[in-house]
Length: 302
Ligand SMILES: Nc1nc2c(ncn2[C@@H]2O[C@H](COP(=O)(O)OP(=O)(O)OP(=O)(O)O)[C@@H](O)[C@H]2O)c(=O)[nH]1
Image (cartoon, rainbow, N blue to C red):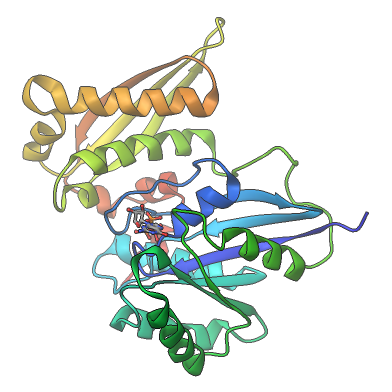
């Protein structure tokens, strides 16, 4: 049997639907999805099989104009993911078209594009009429020689099978990179922290989610098959602590319940989840925080 395997990087503006596509390809939730931008912070890998091919998807943080250290480290991780991949998929939101951000990414592609296969996936086609899609396809192809264009809805699943089959045929011949039943290579402690961060992001308003981070501090396997997980939520100000706690601790309780339920489903066993909040005004400048997120602190240097 000839096997194929390779890395496929998903790049695009924040909110383009990269995590949604990764999860759909893998058939499980390995990357967090929210309606808010900049949810994905690190490079997350998800593994999918298509016939004899193993597709390792790399979900990258959205590409945007960086303002602070964390932003710069995220954007560096995204371009790094693209530069290491066999195939790059640029995801564009159909209804937004060629934004300033997309223009900037197209310029970046010129640099990493040499000798690399780059495909275009116009996502969220459920939101626009088909005439618009054709115009957008030709505009984008006039700006960059994409190897192929796909029109998809990552959320509804349209076009995703065609994309997966095409990708499988483009990967180099070679042995699989992961055991067949592995779906993600992010350490479990990090996946667990991401789940809690997703629940927090969904429940908190405005800028607050970008000002906090979650780490799994301790993971204890118990004899009865369950696991006890302790996590710390780092926030920047005392006031934020109160918001995360909520009235009579309601917010953190709801977050903890939702994260625990999802973890139990993911791991298929009982989980005891304990959340603690720490105020750390400077966590954005602490290198340990970056390594826990899977980012390189130095990439954030101005
Ligand atoms: N209507 C529609 N919505 C979609 C589709 N794909 C993704 N979305 C939604 O778009 C939002 C952003 O999706 P994500 O997958 O988190 O986007 P992302 O590109 O990973 O975002 P960042 O983590 O910020 O880089 C979510 O609310 C998704 O449910 C689609 O095909 N159609």
